[in-house]
Image 1 (cartoon, rainbow, N blue to C red):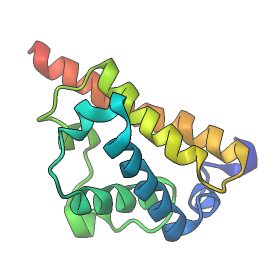
Image 2: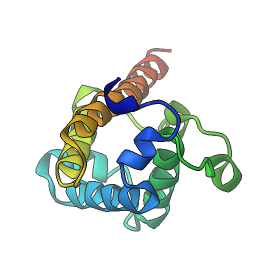
Image 3: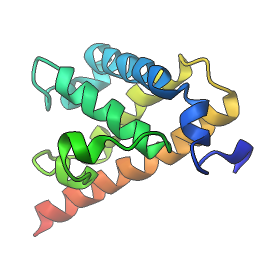
Image 4: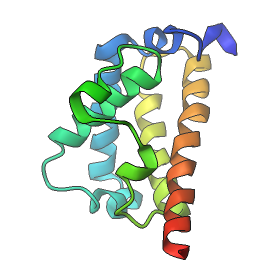
Length: 138
């Protein structure tokens, strides 16, 4: 892995810690609010995004090797479980990843970390899609 990303807190530090992750999440939801291709996934959320922004930021802090406050604040992490009520197929997954890619592109991160992050974040995005498809097939 380039520059040790994925080991210890290297990814968390490369993202700029809590502040860097907060900036990423802010830009992610701006794109979700404004991109035409994100209308469907934006409609899955309520008008007030404060709670989901906070959950995503706290999740990403832990996921990137930083402080793991998610369980204490919100309970156990189950990415597919949190999204169980939504019908998520490839277009929804891709819209989510597009918003994330746009937000990542705007960050002052090293190019190698940007590439690493986008490859890594695609894994849970795909797991959510697969879980959604499987639930609907039952």
